[in-house]
Image 1 (tube, rainbow, N blue to C red):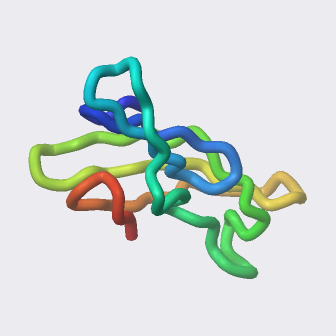
Image 2: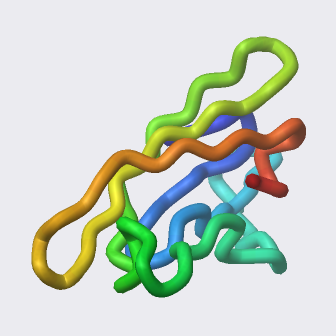
Length: 88
């Protein structure tokens, strides 16, 4: 998803952000990935994360994403950010 001047892409860890002032020239964010998979026992323990959907409500960025274990059991994750770069 495109967030103002930021593109959030996912493959493996979520939040490989690139930025552009003009939509033509892009720079990778030094803090990539901004959201990593959970530890052992979490629904995304294998690092299989994807499908981020981000909504900005005027104050907070809300991200929903899916995660999966290698046995194909998974779930929906939720993270928030005040700036689109630092997620919890």
